Length: 313
Image 1 (spheres, helix red, strand yellow):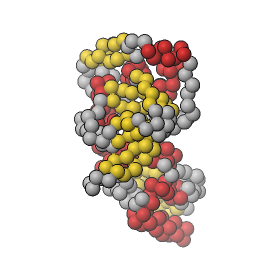
Image 2: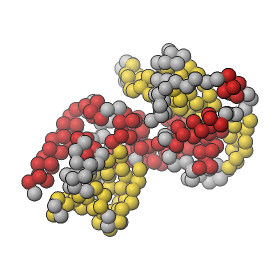
Image 3: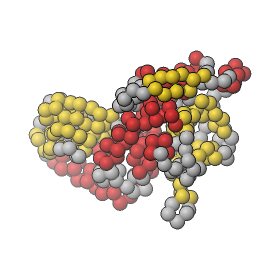
Image 4: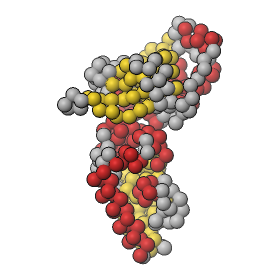
């Protein structure tokens, strides 16, 4: 996550932001797109601003599928915006034409439920982004976002987002959301938060290698996409994992050393979710999982039983 400190902008930066924008005609740079000519806006920025935006988007999981040329285009296309406490940045049900990236400040995200009551979803701060759902799915805004403090934001237009980011993000979210929704640990997490978790998943390939080692610290959760893995305690085979299974949850949830060694049997493809990334996206794990207390208790009970079983071997 980016720092939440407010940035003090001098007059030179303000003047640079006030200069008229230029446009560039460029080819699409997303790895999953066929090439086509699009006009990408190019807002003048100081070198410091360009570097700051690049730093933020490189740390955003949303842009992880964008290549280096595409990242350069994004830096040019982001436009600066300020907001005051109480300003409504996006409103549920409205059409959406921008994605927002927070440089400093905090916003509150709410959504009306089926009965019309406003429900709190989360707070977002420096380094976070919002507004991408309407752009990706050409749908109305899914939530309302209101500034809680003075805000410094960068906005990205629909055209640039669609041609540089959209399809890579949609494919990744659809692929991994179907996996996350089947796990007891995440099946009751709301769809918006699951999408953000999907952004944070990283594919890892192992071939006849150790993925996690008994007794070592570890905080990642692994899910099997392809192939098979085996779990060993003191070199004794105790369990096999197939596509759709997951392991590493003892370290991920309880922050305890690895209870077993897991090795890839042949070539295997996994997705990895870091505990730190989970917390950065959704907040303290206990708070998130306690919202789904029934499943959380079930998972904790299973972990205790598994830990007890492994220690008895």
